[in-house]
Each structure stands twice: as structure tokens, then as C-alpha cells.
Image (cartoon, rainbow, N blue to C red; front, side):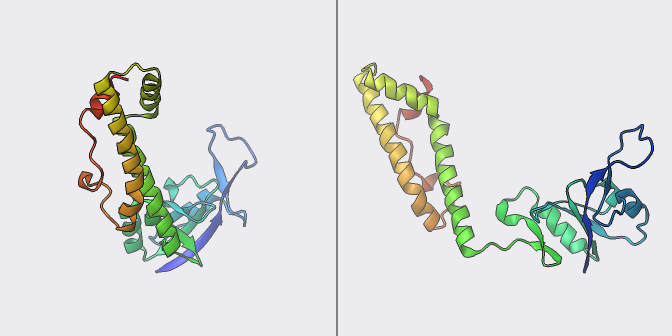
Length: 203
């Protein structure tokens, strides 16, 4: 597998008329993108790379790219890399492919970065589960109703149970992350107390 950096492409206006509004691009060596694409004779795969080094697209037909603002890397004998990149699409931050040190490969995060990502996922999943029961507007409305003594005794008990549940959820996610627990498994999270979802639906 061989990598060839075709350069960073930017849009430019060629001399003469452009009645069809075609966006022309050229690299730092002032080589026109369409001229490069027309000159391709050997089958290969091409990867579109952002200024930050992340691979954002890949193709086996170079003419499909609109490369303004991006780098293009040509890979010979890169079918396996191409297939691996396509399989990663839709994955998370840690699944991305990057261009670094003259090669494209799947990103390998440092342990501390993986830890930070896991923490962020745990916190986000906790928040998602809470607002699925009572979003911020609902929580605010319930708090106001409680302070104005508009809740019945039973509703007040349910409100307090819901408040305790939110605190339990917020206390639970760091331990779940540390234990590498399945965040999608309902059994790993504190159960919503009876009546809380129904009360929230009223507000």
C-alpha cells in the first residue's frame, strides 16, 4: 500500500468565461484538480482529508470529489483500507481515520483521551435518560408548582421521589463508566420511581 499526497486544494477562478459556474480547484503546486483526475490511468482509492487531518470521505472515482479546502491522498493497493474506512462511517470519535506521518490509518486514542471520551458518554447518557422522563422545562415547572404549594400531598411525595431519582442518576454514571458497564442497559441505572413519569407528563 502506497500513499501519495496530491496536496491541499483551494478554489480559484480560471481565465476566460465559466458559464456553468463550475468550481475549479488547484493544489499548492497550481495543478488543476480536473486535470489531475483526467490524467489518472491506474486504479486507486482517494481519501479526502480535512485541515485537521481527519479523513472525511473516500472514493474509487476521484472525479466525485469537490475538494475545495481539503487535502487529497491517493492510495495504491488500498482496497482493504477503503473498506475499513467505509465500515467505520457512523461510528464515534474514536473510530475515525486520520492522515498523519505520511499515511492514513485508524486513529489510536491515548488512554487519557479514551477516559475523557468515556466520561463524556456517561454524562451524556445520564442527561438523556433524565430529560426523557422530565425535560428542563418540566423540571422547572414542577419546582415552581412545589414552591407555590400547588402540588397535592401525593404529588409532592412523587415530586420528591423524582428529585431523589435525578440525584441518584447523577451519582450513578461515574461508577458505571469506571466499571465499563453497558450504558444502554436499563438495568444498570436507577429505576424511575412509580408515578414520576406520569406527574412529569402533566407539566
